[in-house]
Amino acid sequence: MSSTRHAIREEAFQVLFALQNNTEADLLEIYQSIPGHDDADMPAYVKQVVNGVVEHQDELDAQITSLLASGWTINRLAKADLTILRLALYEMQYVDEVPAVVAINEALELTKTFSNDQSRKFINGALGKFEQENNL
Image (cartoon, rainbow, N blue to C red; front, side, top):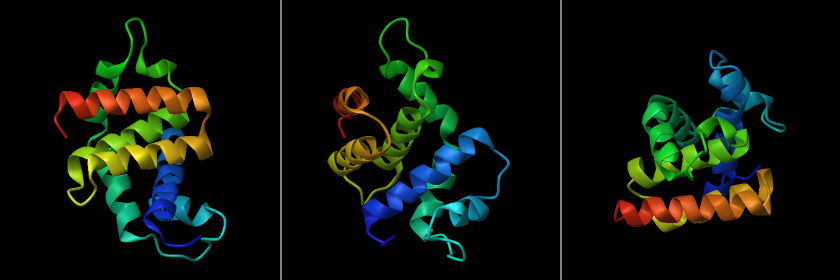
């Protein structure tokens, strides 16, 4: 896999997705389990995003909950969608060199790969609402 920022986000998504099922797993082992990464070192940006999302997960989940329609809970979201939202919200708030519009666009690209069109619309609306409410 190339080392473009998009490819690195895909790798971060895959590591974060795997961590949902095994929070005690070794990050490097998860990264190396991605096809084509058998002996590869984890890129610094993957580490930054994964560690940042894990560190701020409670805050990110509270923000996601506030974006949900009445009657919905975070537990009803598809795990892929939840991971994408966490990653995007982290980048929007904690990665200065990533403008909010880029984080949203990248989230939509991840949704095309790892989720579906209905989720893409939901994620776009939720992140757009968050961007407007927080003047990002």
